[in-house]
Length: 229
Image 1 (cartoon, rainbow, N blue to C red):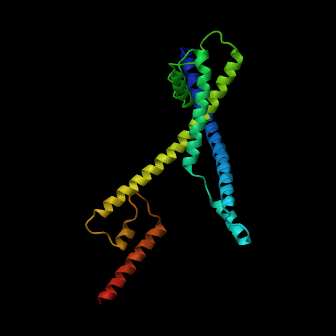
Image 2 (cartoon, helix red, strand yellow):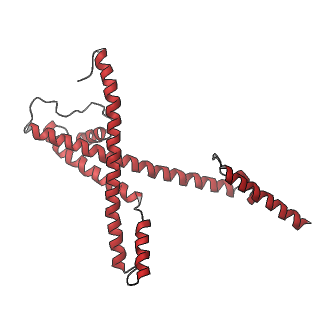
Image 3 (cartoon, rainbow, N blue to C red):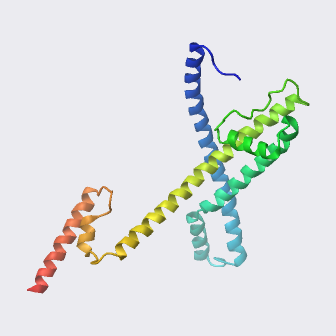
């Protein structure tokens, strides 16, 4: 195994890994931006084609302006983007497994495991390619291996980012659901001034909004006093 043995070599690995990982993350982020832009463009074209096929916003000038405005405001669903990235990752991993299985002598499941560990940059090191001294068509195999690893790493990194967005949306929905359930089971619902004065839990209220809350509470108390009088 190619691991540094000397102190100088380990120091070089630390600095090389620091700047190398930073550059790799920058590359993956740029790839994610481009692939999201490309997928959004494709999905927008499909959405526009579906609207025109149904005959929406045709004939009148104001309808065409409304159609253009709706297209500008339309955004693709994150679930479709996640699905396409997942399919792209599966296609790359499957194609790479068909290459690794005869070249390395691994089973197909071992090849899929290697693809996931390598593409996700986990890198346990239990399965490593290009360890034999001779391969048929060695140069082509190395080029294909490099291309599969780069494309697979980009796709699965983008998939991880989009999946994290979906997980965040699910957690926000779960917190709102639990908060609503707790508010429904309370004995006495709080009044509007109390809600305004309380604000959101674990949130910092800006100064101008805080003054607005105080004004609303004061006016509500004043109106209540007038009615009582």
